[in-house]
Length: 135
Length: 344
Image (cartoon, helix red, strand yellow):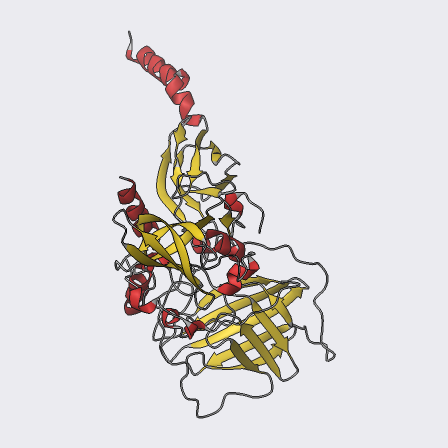
């Protein structure tokens, strides 16, 4: 029900003739599916502190023991840096849980909306929405 | 009962009945504003405009997301919320009867999926008003206003411009393309492929840095491709301009306003806001002022008879960003997105 409602919202209200393009590089809704939220837990294998988006990759093991490498997209380094995330905020080998939305085209990709370390600390918990101080 | 007496009774019943009194009683609209995760949204500016009188009534959602608009005279209202970080909410034709207390919960949709570093917080800051130092605008040794400085991304001069500003009179072909681009979440935007996103002189997304000399104004926008604009103050346009993405810019002072004429565009970049296309006939006139130390004002006029039936003005303001600096951004360093863009 909620998926239907949200789809309607985006379709019906996003058509403002004067709206600024609400994206720096691309609209995340053009690539990722708000109706397909995902939560992944795995080990960080690689970090790409690069443009136009910083990325990190995690190995996620399913119940059968099969491992899939997921590509997690973030904002660009210059924005992450201003908001308090450093190059070493996340390291290869860290176990993390990522919340985000899956790519619409079915690729093993997701955008990252929340990244939590195994000890419960939230990486980049600098947003006021989290109510947390900047790291 | 004589007819006359009956009439008096009927009129009396109407005048003194609760129903008639209620028509003169003000009504109200109240409810809760929430986001796509059903979390409350405090500080949302809710406004209604009376269809009958044009009067505007405003309220702001509380820390618990609740709001009450009123007292409102009975009538029909168009309701809006324009809030940085969210898609503008519109609900036209809300009818309020006399004395009615209408409950209206409002779900806002994020303008971007709330990606870390590129989500609601980011865009709320970009589109928001920043505190700036006060004082007069600095001047160059030759007495001109000095635009030099690091500036936040430009925003609409009127925060409600999306609702109330002049609408572009686009030709049908251009309006159709703009609609398709917006509905498709900008999937074919040149920026997705690390090409110039739009033609406007200062970025609405990235930090801008202006460097002014007597003969040249340079505008650097850290995330743009290319990241610089040159505005020549000592010459006109060359006679044999080749069309380019961002055109050729010259500037002349009219008092304290720098009037920038940009011409010689190709037709590849988009016009923001609105995702409009343009033709090679586009001429962009930008009037830049620095009314005080902390603000830069831009009035951009898009003149393109191939796209619009009359010139279209857009007014913007940028806040000074003391202590800020622009950063390197090499867009095509690791661009994986273009091949995964689906659109709707």
